[in-house]
Image (cartoon, rainbow, N blue to C red):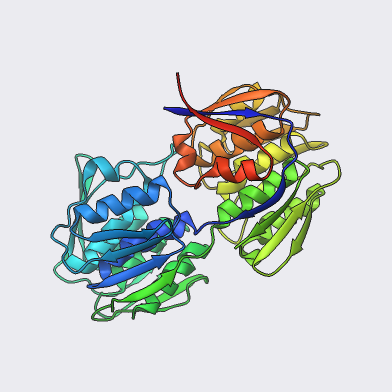
Length: 420
């Protein structure tokens, strides 16, 4: 067990470079299972979730080689199993993408029920509904899902709710299915578009990613020996944008996509921040008192739930009262009790949090409750008066690469040490 010790009251200044998107990487790596060949992926985030999925691919018979810190070569010509190790799939949420990929490649799959951060109920009924519409038989028992199909046949599928996971899983299952699949009421997140772009680059016929409807014409095979670069991480970009705002700092954020950040940018400007679009970089700064605003999380292009805890830190020191409505995960406000230890005034009940701004936060011993909460508490510790100790930082390592090094280059005083 490790922890961060953070000396606070720091204004963050400098530049930071964004890694490839975690949420894209954990979908595209399973997608390589659909290819009977070799795939080279660039701009891969070197984080714990990615390392776990690479270990799972190896257990299935793939040969996975890291050419450098951010380039992974996956050879899937000799897969010998469709049974993902249960002790690994239980460690993170995106393990369920193995179902769609293995169904598409081998016609069967056995995957443990996914784990990850405890953010409330995360049903996979829409995934199962979609697989069954394609002709698969799904058995859910003893903590694992068995899926099988003699042949997957394209079908129209309507999702009852907008689901990122179900959208990705049905794309994976449909690209090699016979006939045409039309997915309606789909999610539009940038990493879904990136997955579709990757699959199209190796021969899939996917149209409409980024809109409400995705049409997939099944093909007989996908071609190997391709190189693909993963899109920059929208959530890491947003985390550093909010860090600049909360610390009243000035950060140049490099290797990012400005247009992916529209909903956050609007709120940062409302709160008193400044944003300069520099093409594949942006500069975020703040030189005035922060103002309260209201946040409502929604599927993309709405405000991302994965940036809700971080923006709450900035709102906790803003002038006035802010309200956050969380419409994605029912238990996303677990972090608020930790911020209240620091002197924040947050009342959270159900899917609503009311934040009364205070003059400053005070350092305290803190416990990350999930990945994005961990990032939020790290930002809070950097801007707070005094010293903080942040525990459960393995959550942060799931989605952020060398986060303490990046913040240190911006002036933060952070030390990673073994927990006594």
